[in-house]
Image (cartoon, rainbow, N blue to C red; front, side):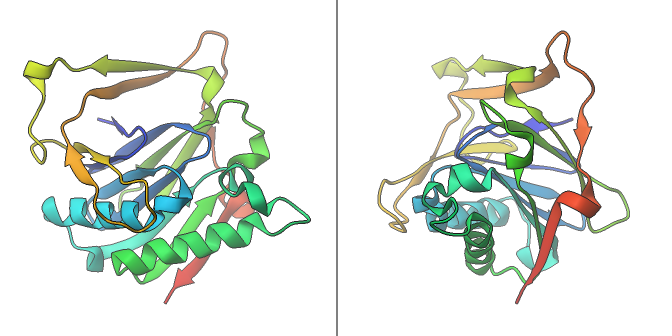
Length: 219
């Protein structure tokens, strides 16, 4: 069953993780031999903190980054790096540097892959879903413009808050200062519970891996 991660939420699933409304954010997934661990990164200024939160989440769930086989980071390169639009700079290089930063914080060494959603020119962001492909060290990636997806969000009543660490999705309350690391886990106030095509929308798109997937190796 797919889990869905909104901004500043971490989650794990054996096979499927979805990320709604990736506009300025980045969908990050660490794939191990058995699990997918994801985090919906918000603003780049807090990347160190979010990567540390993801590491903490993985460890609390009994995972080990040493078992990682692929690290993914998918986003709109130019929206995420607004000061990197040509000719001012290279947004693709900025994405690569951020992924290296995440890998270093996690202590991950291996393949790093990503997809630049700017190729589909989304107006309201992109929905991105990762499916772990059994028997391989990769995920299949599906996507659709956010404006063509209907998301169901469940608001959780205070008396029904699940204690942090008891479920497969936790929410991080970040600090405002870069690298401060003083954020904390909080009980989920709301969760996205589904992502379906709106009436009239055509089928899901699967990434053209040969043409659109960028891969390098984190040392």
